[in-house]
Each structure stands twice: as C-alpha cells, then as structure tokens.
Amino acid sequence: MIALRPLTYDDAPAIRRVYSGATVTFLGRPAMTCQEAEDYVVRVRERAACDPVEQYILGVDAAGDLLGVVKLGRRPSGHGRVSYVLREDCWGRGYATKAVAELVVFAFTTAGLDSLGAKHHPGNPASGRVLEKAGFMRLGIQNRMVEYLLTFA
Ligand SMILES: CC(C)(COP(=O)(O)OP(=O)(O)OC[C@H]1O[C@@H](n2cnc3c(N)ncnc32)[C@H](O)[C@@H]1OP(=O)(O)O)[C@@H](O)C(=O)NCCC(=O)NCCS
Image (cartoon, rainbow, N blue to C red; front, side, top):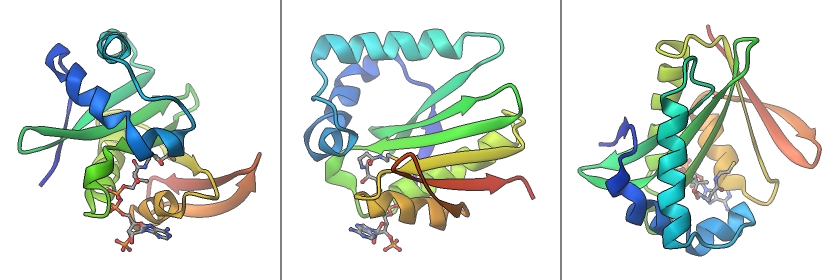
C-alpha cells in the first residue's frame, strides 16, 4: 500500500536518497546533495502554500518509508502535466503505477483538471509502461520525447 502525502522538512534525507544512483542517470542530472535536498523540500512547501497551487509535489509513502515523489503541474487551461521519480531500490514492484493512478484521481477531483499529459524519454520504456497502466494514451514522439494524454471521462 502506498499513500500520497505532502512533504515535511524531515523528508530531506529521504529525498536525497530518491535523487541518487540510477534514478538520476535516467533524469540526466547529478545526485542531490544534502543542501539541495533541504532546499528542495523548502521549495516544494512554498509552492504548496501558493493560491492557486501551480505545482503539486507529493511524497509516495509506503508504511512511513518515502519511496519517491509524484508531480502535477497545473496549466490555466485546465490541463495538467504529470511526472514521477522513484528510489532505485523499489523499482519493479508496481509502486509508480499505484502512485500515478492515485495522482490521476487527485488531478481530476481535488485539483479539478480536465486532461493530463506526460512524457518520457524513448530510452525509458518502464516509464511509458507506467503511464499505459494508469490509463494514458500514447500520442507519439514530439521533440524527441514520447508524449501521452489522459482526458477526464
Ligand atoms: C520509471 C519509474 C518511475 C518506474 O517505477 P516502478 O515503480 O518500477 O514502476 P512499476 O513497477 O509500477 O511499473 C514498471 C513497468 O515497466 C515495466 N518495465 C520495466 N523495465 C522495462 C523495460 N526495459 N521495457 C519495458 N517495460 C519495462 C515493468 O515490467 C512494469 O510493467 P508490468 O507491471 O506490466 O510488468 C522508475 O524506474 C523511476 O523512477 N525511474 C527514474 C526516473 C524516471 O525515469 N521518471 C520518469 C520520468 S518521465
């Protein structure tokens, strides 16, 4: 079981573990430092306090263990953009699929969005599989990324 929840300042060490190893290789960025992880949590909490919220970043929590984050960006048109990052040692257990499915419900209810988009690098098929399992439709390649869409039924 996983739950999506807001980040707290105590999550900084767990966020640093998420943004390390093979995970950051896929994201094409360096591993996070302690300071960057602390700054990240501060930024996320500031964005969560905005009205209206333009970007939600929620922790993926399994029995108190923060496994990763899911992100939802809100566009004024009612369209949202979804992305997700999971710690390397918990890949392949269905956590990302469950987290994205929960984020979709959140997006179409609490956030009041009408449609969602997402993209992944063609060299990261696991990410596409997550989107397909969560109900997204593959649109094709745009700007060297595979684009997906999900509309509120
Ligand atoms: C992509 C990522 C979120 C997947 O997380 P996860 O918890 O392992 O995902 P799940 O277990 O829910 O599902 C993974 C699916 O991809 C499949 N998969 C794994 N490797 C694959 C590959 N090389 N080719 C095709 N499918 C693959 C799995 O079999 C599984 O599908 P299944 O349930 O039908 O068997 C995780 O690897 C990650 O955080 N990567 C780094 C950051 C990233 O790439 N984020 C996405 C940016 S768009």
